[in-house]
Amino acid sequence: MKTLQLPHGQLRLPVFLPDATMGVVRSVDSADLARCGVQGVVMNTFHLMQRPGSSTVQALGGLHQMSGWQRHIVTDSGGFQAYSLIRQNPKNGSLTNNGITFRPGGARRKFTLTPEKSVQLQVSYGADVVVCLDDCTHVDASLETQRESVERTIAWARRCKDAFERLVEQKSLPPEQRPLLLAVIQGGGSRELRKRCAGELLEIGFDGFGYGGWPLDGDGNLLADILAYVRELVPAVFPTHALGVGHPPYVVACARMGYDLFDCSLPTRDARRGRLYAFVTEPPPLSPPLAGGMKGGASDWFSYVYATDDKHTKSGAPISIHCDCPCCTDYSLGYLHHLFEIEESLALRLATMHNLRFMTQLMARLREE
Image 1: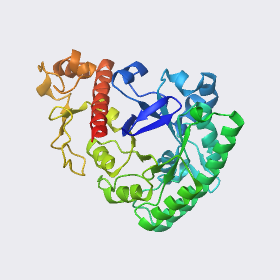
Image 2: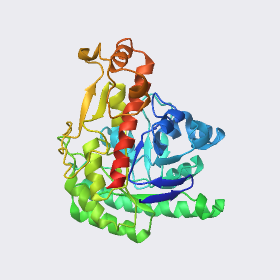
Image 3: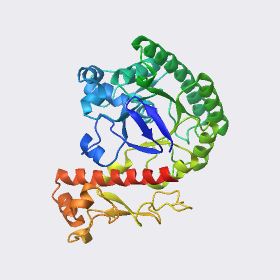
């Protein structure tokens, strides 16, 4: 079994990491996550530096102590948020070669995020994996925009590496307590730019690499060819993170390309909206070939269960007979439907635990392949 050694122990790969963007996976606590078999989570520097604020995170003992989560934490740098906030609406801030300046909606002051500050904050938070600040783009952006993104991403990665090494030296961190530093490969849909970005980052030297940029095209299809190409550019010895990939068939496709880490808000967001995942057959169901389709629908090995559908009103069955999550073990689908109908917060917790358990079961099967 492939593993990654981190300050909080071994991380078994491949692994899905739920998004705990602001220090929490919505609707569940750390005990719920552990009960579902979650190994680690992803938290976001861009959001945490605003709320609760970096000084508060540090006053509360860092992210692990603050959130009561003693397993692995990956901190995203904020590059994607800059893309979604600024590239899509320049009134919210600006991207320069120095860094990112932004004023989120309703904020009283401007925030500045440079490569050095991003790394400093992530290390101060106590992250197990630190991600370099990158300049994120959409695959449909112009070649000129992609070229500028690659140049900036490489320059920022070099500054992140320098800042990281200074901090490790200043803190006198022994190897077992040192977080890993991941760089992000940009380049949109251009193989030439992806190759150049990967080559430059490999020369600088990092502990692992991430696929940068929105992983779907304008129609919502997985950019499978580009994802596979980027993975081929990185030697197999390095762990790779398929940033933002979380739809089950897409996770399977990317895991089979060789990607090791996945994160996305989709499974937990779907759960809160009553869209639940269920294996069609008892896990492990992934006998090749597992195409599942490259679009967003269900497949021949899993299906959606919509908890709010009226047809489930009197159902005494669990969401899935193949699931051992607390909801499927202790409650019926009819009861969960009732909880959604009366807008009871317990519905969100039970549904979230179910989808998280589905993802951990899925990853366990992929680790056996």
